[in-house]
Structure formats: structure tokens, C-alpha cells
Length: 336
Image (cartoon, rainbow, N blue to C red; front, side, top):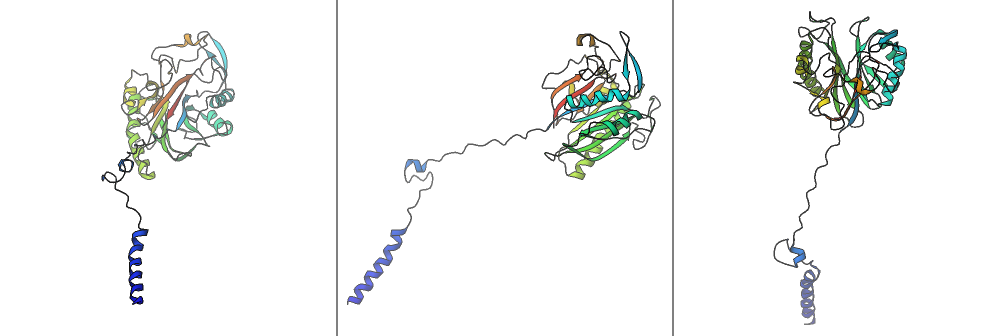
């Protein structure tokens, strides 16, 4: 009898154990059970996706004047300046450092300039480019070696019949070229295409501009495919020998934007001349020439312009030493 009572008591205990140890059910939100605090559903605020910060850089276009003369006479009034590459090169290095230039396209690099670039360019910079011929004019793209890496480079002639070999239009004095390089930003891994050119000063500028416009998508698509790039910013700098009211300018701006017109910061008055010949002036007010702008930075739509300016490198007003060239340097801070 006692054995039966013990077995009955044990069975009752076994039945009670799960009930004692079971965790109370938590009511589902909005089920109507439990306290008000437990039933209220708090909506998590939507967090905005962070906007990608653009990589900024100071870009320059500069025709350095190819001649290498001991003296050059400035105009209005006449005054003699030292125009040797050796002297002007010292001032060019000061300009690069003073303006913190990241990447630049140079035009009119004759043999003395190309020797100077190889031997005396600030060691912070590397450069790519090819001269048109041993005794003629060439162009270089200089870049900060600590920031950028050229991964592809090339050149094409500004002639639609055969851009892959030296050629020129009958109206042109020289066989003009366009130098390009695909750069990788070391800090971010981003890519951008940089191009440098010098259109002819006697004729066929619109035809030459059309060759560039036609080549941009060809090169861009090739680079995008080769490196898996979704969107490739493009910059074109150069002495276009074309004012804003010319057909060559209209051709170029059919594909790219004139950075001068898209600056978010203080933009130098467009009437300032970028190529006014050699002038000895008393102040910036003496230096205005309506429409005489022929040096440009052209950009694709992905690129923003933070600031645009010119440095008076063709006058005695140049802060890096009087007279570096007969052109002014165009300097633009951009974001890609």
C-alpha cells in the first residue's frame, strides 16, 4: 500500500516540474496581451546612406611656351625678360609647389623643356607623354607620384583619317596630338581618364576637336572593360587655340563641360585672357581682354568644380617670378 502511495506521489511531482520551470510566454507585439509597453511597436528611424565623399585634386593646364631664348621682349610697354627654359623652369617648380598641383597637362614641350622635365622637374612628380617628333613640340602629363598611378597610357593624332599614326590636315601647320592616361587614385582605388592636347593655331581646329570627341568614348569603353570600371570620369586639358565663340569650342562642349562655367567657388571673370601675349602690366585691371580665353579644362558630368582660377604666369604680376610663359596657368579644384 505504501509503495502505491509513493509511486502516486512521484508521478504527481513529475507532472508538476515542467509547469514550475516553464518560461512565461512573451506576448507578440500588437496581440492585445500583456502591458501597454510590451505591445507598442517602436519604429526604427531609417538611416540615410552616407554620401560618398569625392576625391578632390588641383588640376592645371599650362602652355609653357616652347622657345628657349636668353631674352624676350614683352609688349606694351616693351621690356626684356629672361626666357630661357632653365630660368623659367625654376619658377615652374615654384608654381607646382605653391599651388599644390596634383595633376597637370603641359603643352609646347620642345626639346629643351623635355630635357628639363627629365632632369629638373620636382621629384614629387612623375610624367607621361610623347613628343610629336624629336625636334618638334610634345606634351606631358605630370602627376603626384604619392597620390596617383598611371595604369594605361596612349596617344592619338588629331586626324580623322588615321589617328593611330602621324598625320595632319592641310589647313594645319603641325601634326597635332592628344596624350592620355588612365590613372588610379592610390587612396581610394578610383580611376579617371586624363587627356592633354594642343590644337593648331592656323586652322582645322574644329576637325581636330571632333577627333578628340570621337576618341573619348572609344578609349573610355576600352578602359572600363579592361578594369571593370562602372563610371569613368574624364578630364581634358589643353591650349585649344579656340575662343568660346568658335566651332571647335562648340564641338568640345558637345561632349564635355567647360569647367570655367561650373565652379561652385569663386570663378575668375571669363574676360581675363589666358593667352594675351607678353604684357607688362600695373594691375589685374589692366589685364582684361574680352573673350580671349583659349586654355581650358573640360570635364565629364561626374566631376564637380569647387574652384577655378588663373595665375598670371605671363606677366610681372606672377607670384612665382615674373614671366613663366606667354600663357596664364589655368588651375581648377575638382571632385571626382
